[in-house]
Image (cartoon, rainbow, N blue to C red; front, side):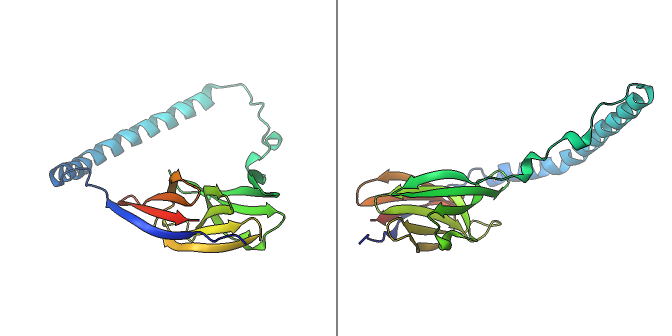
Length: 197
């Protein structure tokens, strides 16, 4: 019988402020002063582009050979891709979307089929261990809120080890036979968890 991993918080490290209050104030005032200038410059460039395009169409006699019906929508197919194989089980992922300037989120399925994986959103973090796979399940795609799950590859069951971890940026710093160190960055602080196997 496989042992279920246990999680405990080791350390919570606050991130130091990156700039002083004076620098922050100067940036805000500078942005307020410069914004109208940038806006006017941008509108001027757009007006110039529209004028150039109109003149180009007016003086151009050549017909376009572009046929919109010949273009195939490559984004409509989103195939399942194998990402991990362990103990006669293969884990597949399909891209659902991504956070702007952040990580992607996925749907997972397995062969043989594990129903508990269906209709859930998972992050791109996964870590195989001796008795199974650690997974990151997202509770929201608008804010950082994730659960640490353990997928037992022998019994094909899915169990929550920790819920509502306020981060989706995870990495494993060190692994031994009995313990894995999980680092979660919330943006304001770094959380260090020990996962005992």
